[in-house]
Image (tube, rainbow, N blue to C red; front, side, top):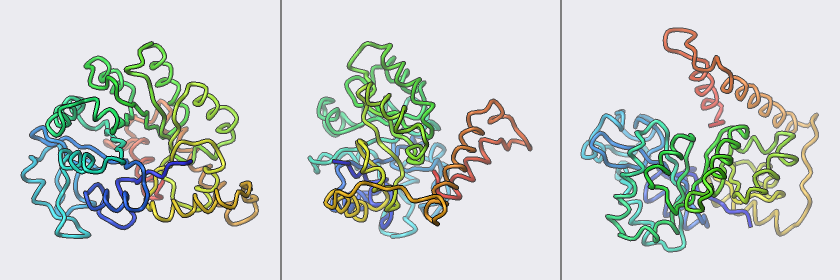
Length: 317
């Protein structure tokens, strides 16, 4: 059955990447929680999506330039009683919930030493890496992080997931994994932006390629009813969602009715919306994949930066 993975916990209703958010995702039926790691100035790990605290917390500081004791003074904008969660606190919560797993989203803006620090903090909670290998997946955005994890042996035995905005990036991860010929570092899966699943080649070539290589396939961030039903009609491992309650309900209803999925026609409002967002996504992919993406167009502003900001504004990322 399609797994429903809580995006930063139960992000739709509770302060993201906090113990409360994890608990509510667990109660809602999530089997896995995707959660984000950031490294502090003094080498500690906290759970936060952004490199700064402006969006979620009551003061704006850059996490990598701030010590942990200062970060622990911040208050959630949603609930002032809630403080930022440390990785150790998250691990302790996971230890106390034996049916749950974490997919760790390792942001490439961190220093790679974060991987080593993460292992040390795991061992401080339970000094048994085999225990954590059953409970944690490492989500990596860039191939050089994968290579670093192999070189330092920090990823040995852990499930490794490539988190990718576009399908074209998957091949490098897959081929590198195969070149290792070592099951200790085998790529476990690929987590793709869900709009990739609507591209014409996804069912015909991309999904078969990933499945032929025995890879789990995850899609993020899936929140609309039509997307959940569409993805439920395919052989996908899991979806990362903001509202696990609504998503579980839609998934279960679709499975219970066992009605084949029929895509909306183009001249319907839903069909046009799907077509439009796919075209926007494809334009963004071409821009971000071009050799001009990182060339400044005005001061330090690049096409990459502008495109990412636009995608965030329209909730694509």
